[in-house]
Image (cartoon, rainbow, N blue to C red; front, side, top):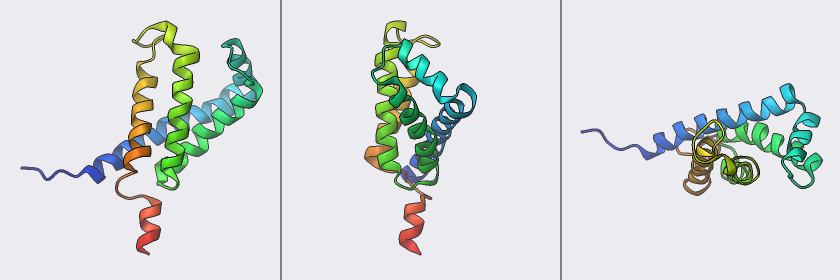
Length: 133
């Protein structure tokens, strides 16, 4: 009855995932502060926490915006997948599967980011618009 529109489905996924990552990056930069994030990362045993904190925050904030608009979104999504896999490994794995301590959200975000990295961003990307015009 309804025609399948995978490009539209990917676009919806891309925008929502991009918003989630953008908001987490915003939180790290403007609410927690990079030094606070570095301290938190250090308490989790993340190596080079003072380097990892701004890198993760940038991947989330800038990468999230790139994913939303669909520019270099495959690369940004692949990096975001790595970030959340790191969060699972360093912070969430010991908490079991279910939220709030578990890794279910991070696993879902990793899978969604992998989908965007592998399948593309679907319809209405900046890259698609640039090719047409």
